[in-house]
Length: 155
Length: 152
Image 1: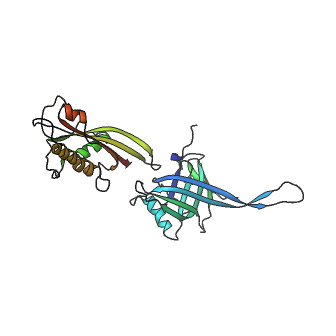
Image 2: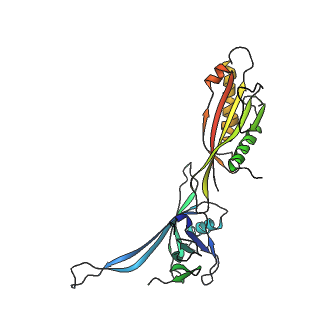
Image 3: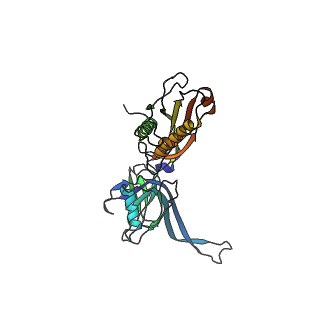
């Protein structure tokens, strides 16, 4: 198998419901960086002189860039989520949703940042930061199996 | 049959130049055409001629997961043979240099007002004249190279 490319990673927007999702690729996305990071808590005992650390909660943040295009539904959905309190249901995978083994995350995300560098020679992009929002739909791991994504809790 | 993208861009550049108006200075070109070549020494026709040609294209970077940033380079040559006696007068050359600036550089190099087949002008260079051609052939010869970009 050849190298996996960032170019082939995909961010999907759910245009259906949480229970019956309809995934539409957001094609104007340029880059994404997925940053899962566990919080740590010291868990030392007198049993060992070696420090031990427990995992507590998983901070999940995704940053990325999308080309500004006021006719693109994917861009508009991210922009509208930035300018409101409404979360957006996104599936972020490191491959197409039909490629077995591709994996990532699904959540109702809040869009927290929307930096747009308007320097003279630039093609405009919105740099965004998203994090899971507190909704009834808990964030899930996603892995593609048998040609479609399967969602499970982080435990 | 569809043309190469860079040819589409060159055609749009030629059409924009040909559309005029030619009031500053008031010199109507004898021809404005997209070409693959021209014969500067053998062509004895007179009048100001504009040759537009495709030069190169490239992909400087990927723009998004579905699009690339593409660059198309177009060349424009403005040439005119001086038919008077003696050396071309300074004012005659000045007027041709001004013509290139107004009718090529300002018109199709204007990122705020011009697009060539969906491409915006990005960078450009002008060679104002060729001293050797002016001296030996009495031909004013100016080259403009423009790079246009699009996300597609």
